[in-house]
Image (cartoon, rainbow, N blue to C red; front, side):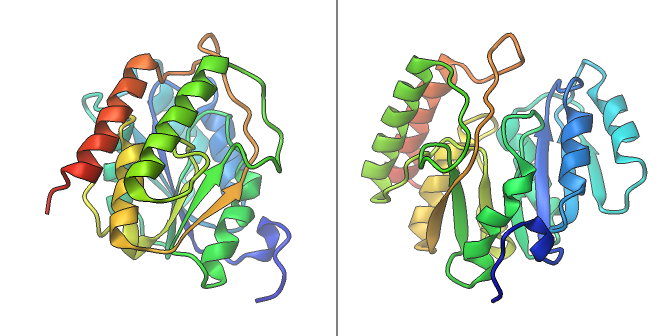
Length: 242
C-alpha cells in the first residue's frame, strides 16, 4: 500500500455512525466536516429523540446527500441504543463511531484507517493519551476515572489499551455486525471492548487529538456513567452470555 498521509489518499470505504442527542449547536458543522472527508462512503445519523431542534437541523445539514442515512428514535434510549441502530444500517467495509459534538477531529480518519486498510488490524481504537495530537486540558478527576476504568478493563480483558473510553472506535463491518450491543447508554464502551477481546480479533490503538467540552458547553457523561462502566466491565468479562 502506498503511503497514506491524509484522508485524500484513501478511496471511499467508511460508514460513519453518529449518535445524536440535543446537539443542535454543533451537529451541522460536524456533518459538514465528516462529509468533506474522502474515505466517507456513508454517514448514518441516529437522532435519539432530541428535543432542542436537532432533527430539523439534521434535515437541513444533510441537504439530500445520497451518502446520508437519517434515523430518528421516537423515545430517548441512549448512546448505545443509537449505535445499535446505526451499526445495523452500515454498508461500507469499515465502520466507525463519530460523536456529534466537536471533541474529535474527522480530518484524522486516515490515522485510524491505516492499520485496517493495510491488513494488520480488524479493530482500531483511538487514544487521547498516546501524545501525538492536541489535547485540551480539562477535568483532573475525569482523567483519574478514565485511568481506573481502562486499567480495570485491561485486567479483565488482558489487553493493554491506554484509553478504553475514547469515542473513536473503528471496525471491519462484519466484526461489529457480528456482536449484539446490549448497553443502551455509555456502557457501550466497556461492553464493546470486552466483546472484541473475546473474539480474539487484531486490535490496534492510534493516537488522536481531543478537543474536549465542559459541562457548560454540552458534555453529557457523568459520574453515574462511570460507576455503571465498572459494572459493565465486570458483567461482560466475568459473566458473559453465550
